[in-house]
Image (cartoon, rainbow, N blue to C red):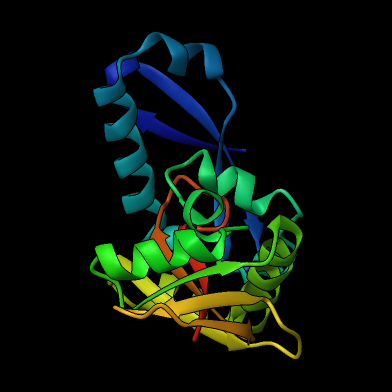
Length: 196
């Protein structure tokens, strides 16, 4: 345990520091104290802790090992956090895809065959790109990033912009990630879909 002085309480706040790989996790030992202060004070404390620990305190977000171990509920979790893979890109009819390709400003309207296929493709995409995702989260400042993967099996179908011709047996997927420091992964999946 390390004690970090902080004048706001006229006392010392005990902080537990746990090093996990490159990431330093800050554990608040006296939660009742934290819960009684307003958000501004907590943010000030977090900033002071990071300054005291140095820049390495924020590294390690997007650990490739964690990214590779995403569960079968990944799309449900991401959907509840603003993603739209399940809503727009899973189990759509040919008519739905044709309508979307004609009416919306998209290069192609595509969908995964079903939720199970979508989940498997997203998991494989994240696993194959885990090192690159980690590099993006730890070294780059862009808020959004795209990752593509070629699969060895059919994942869905699609229609090109302004077309009425359905293409079957698509085997390449795309995931669009948004940086999110509140997520254990370090990102949210905005969307994922097959590529023509």
